[in-house]
Amino acid sequence: MGTILPAMLYLALLFLPGIALARLLCRGEQRLPAEWWLPLSFALGLGVHAVACSLCLLILGAIPWIGIYLFHATVAVAGLWYSSARPGFPTLDGFTPLPADANRNLLRLLALVGIVFFATLYHNAITFPFTGYDGQAIWSFKAAILAHEGTVYTPTFVDPARVHYHRNYPILVPMVLAGLYRAQGAVNEPGARVILTTFFPMLVVAFFAVARRLGAAPLVAALAAVPLFSLPWRNDFGERDGGVLGSGSIDLQFGFFAFLSVACFMIYWREGRRWQWWIGAICGGLCVMTKSEGLLVVAATAFANFAQAILAPGQYTRRAVLLRAVAAPVAAIAVALPWLLVQSRLPNFYDEDYGGQLNAATIAAGIERLPVILQVTGADAARVWKWNYIWVVFAALMPFAAAGWLRRKDFFLDACLLPWMAACIFVYTISPLNLAFHLSTSSARLMSQMAPLVVLRILAFFLERLTPR
Image (cartoon, one colour):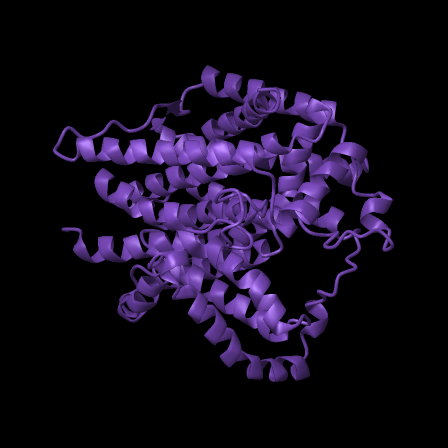
């Protein structure tokens, strides 16, 4: 309990400002069910922490941890007081009641299985150490440095003689874990694993909420979430680690923010609620602060928003929706800007200069790599023991989905996912790293980041065609 209780209290400290911001952003809604406000509060609370820490690093050069904790409490109290004292803000309800029909017991059974699965994940988090290289040498290591030294402007980050790769990697997750370490006065790895594990139930709950918003019945939404439980959320995808989240990599955490960003933008174009646009933009910025691939998510959602604004603006004028499409990536970058300014001051002593690879000769030479890249990633995607059937089904449905593009319907997710995939393949073609090494260490992790959206795309495909109108 000495390691777990501090983690739970720290999670509560992160949740409270997120709850306040969720109520403030969702003004105009009458109520928010738990399947919405829980993941939104979690994401926004982490965002408050990461942006506050980044601003301190940018302005002060260090993170005053006591000030960060007081800032969380202030945001929570002020936000909840303001939203409670004025009308128009939503009430936070429990989970949507189960329907009184024959499916009620089956839904209860699925919920029970999910709870047991989550309990197993938390048991593994408490029991087993990080086993992956990235978890030990990058993310957990950065968190320990931040907790101990309170800054990134230290020889541990900037001295090339120190063994510390990826010094300018985004550090949203290490900043979150460092807050726990600093509050407890020691590195609490089991507590850190509890925090990292919490992303998975939040992702499942968010998936269920989005599926219901798309028109899926409760049982259909619950069954559609089942494949998420079979996906390999780990770094090395081996059998030797201590459970699904045992490696310490943060691809699940990145996938959570990416899912919320893309899904909220998609729902925004269907319903037009302002808070959906804001959550999409904010979570896009949090993607940038979590992993380098976050810029791909912002670019992909920007492309999809432009495509939607031009091809299917709905009830709004094309000028109005184009302005919103332009503003979305701007808002996302604005959220991440404090960290991007800090990051610009940090060196990278690892051979990953992709910007220097953008020349005609490298791009032309990279075309020869395409057959190998497609063969390796395609073979991996076809491994049903690893990915279930989600990539196989997704590939099989794409020719049929293309017919919907011509009718300017049901294309937002495709306009996000396909450019995102294409950009990842392009990076492999110009990568300065050994191709076999680069694919073996990253391709499966990139696919795991997209996997929740792929499952959502499959569900949306069938809902579009089978739901009575």
